[in-house]
Image (cartoon, rainbow, N blue to C red; front, side, top):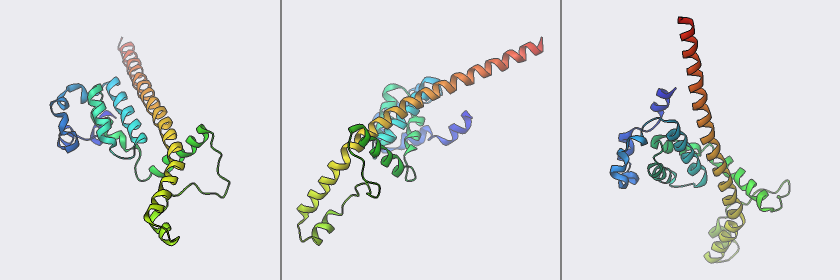
Amino acid sequence: MIRRLQTLLPSRDRLHQMRWLRWLGPRLHHPRLWHFSRRGLALGLALGVFFGLLIPVAQIPFAATLAVLLRAHLPAAVASTLVTNPVTFGPVYYGAYKLGRVILGQPAPAGDEQPPVFPDGAGQAAQAGGSWLDGLVMAWDWLTDVGKPLVVGLAIVASVSGVMVYALVQWAWALRVRLARRQRQRGRRRAL
């Protein structure tokens, strides 16, 4: 399983070639960043999931930088940012928006009412005979309506998911070690 995971993760050379990680320079050569260990892998995956869910852009640089600073498994941190991708982006952000509305105590929209859609500010303002400034105001109104619940929801989802991934990896690793130990003990008993 570990070898299969290693084939899916970006290689050391590939990460060294990424221009937004070059500034880390010699710090990328630290052996703990590349070694599979329980703590390193769990922390790397948790960081990647956290930043992958929290911010829509520049996820990889944030996850990689924190992984280097905390000596987490760097390829796992980079790869796990892909938890949000074009397929999962919509449902994750819509769910986070709904969660943020519930947490903030904002009333739920009526059954047939759709969530706010980003306005085509210039087009709607031109149709109404207004200026580009009216379109900007409409966009700002939309952002303040959606922004706060979305940010609160994303912060909660990212934090809980990061902690859960960390705990799950720690638990799975410990379970794997226990099962391997039991198999070794059974093998010794049979040999006697």
